[in-house]
Length: 626
Image 1 (cartoon, one colour):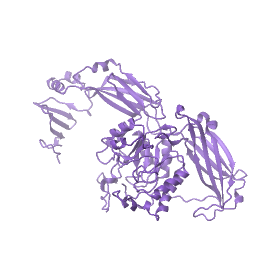
Image 2: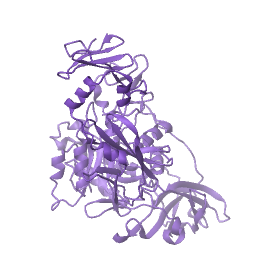
Image 3: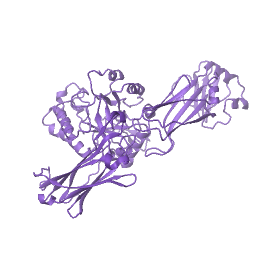
Image 4: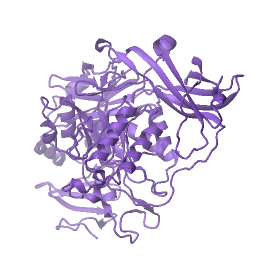
């Protein structure tokens, strides 16, 4: 489901290093937890394994050492500083394409994070993406730095425990979305601004996870996800759907062909080798819709041996093969997901694709989230997909898709299936996602209490406030609103509050009016992805429904004068709100600027709809006017 675009659309950098240099390094942050202490570790370490290569003899590595610094990014304070001599390897290295490499060495650091960082130790999660700056310096025996590398480190642990994916000892919910790299002007050439726009909008729509479908992304993407806080499923560039489009002949897939085995394995190895140090990556994916065979098993085996700190995902072959640590069905119905037998299956369920966002869709998304919230082994999923892959047509002010360029074959509109438009304007369905995926769950009880629950795993409600407003017959009551003093709720805790406002209580007994309570929860202060007073979640409840026949009788019988207008709070309405004009016969007229809507008081039927006296609907036919 993407454009077939040729060319080089990512930066290619050619650089040189000295004859003795840092070739690679691997960072790990193993931690131990006690269940009663939640997400605070009892043990935490920083492990750094540095590989050094030399184009000279092994003697060139003698007396060389690596210096490691760990800095607090918030204030620049150096928290850890260590150095170790390079230990030369007894055997000559073999690096493809590097025949002049004659010797190698390693340096391993092990830092007790609790001892050295103490209260400075903050764990990384999508909710609280705390990062530290790691700097590695390769130095000669006289202290001269001849090479250096740096990266951001996040202390976090990913484990499989009791049929759940846990981050820092806490089961998480994947509020995820699939994302293709796409720009409406530049195709697959993405700027950092475009990436930031996607990440900020994902955070604002309450997404906490993204699947890199179906290839490793621009490496800058992972840096930004680590900084702003998104869980990432990194996926190997491997899909062979065209070999077996009906999923009936698995043995024709390249994963069964030994001539393709090395190329397939290399796709997985290159992804992991490049990306393994990014804290945002919590799951490796072996690819997408590529069948199941020995090459898939080989890729899973290599990754598990190289990186024991992350689970593996792969949907091909039925979503529950030995090569996947997660049951990851694609477009499974809610009933099918609920049928996974807890007694037989010991792996968690995460939908790799669901709620296909093409056209007017996502309508039953609430059913999935009802299931996710009620069953602990269901840990969310990734909606398909993020952005409509349309190209800008400046002349027609529209979006172009498959076939609009005379291209054959093409995918037609099948690349237009995102939650947002190509220019990053949200579809209406995106706001449904925001509501259902909100970390703030609100409910109204029949006894008159509002209940607010913290659905996050790590963050408290320290920075959140709430305001309430009553709408009386669709209009806000200025004398019936206020602020809710939400306590600093810890994760999974809830708080109940009874509204005792006298006007609010009086409105509940009025039978001739519709009474709606609206509550909005917002961030008081700006964050890295939202301005001050940004609404995280809002919800409305109809507390008192007026009787239609009573209300219509009131409208028809009230004389058309200023007192009536004041009675219905319409005297000072802004021009952006509609006005009900005096009924004529059995017709009711509603005016909004140059737009007039006429309805029958007898049947409720729309009789006419005009704008600037031009009919938008053909009178009597119900059809749109052309």
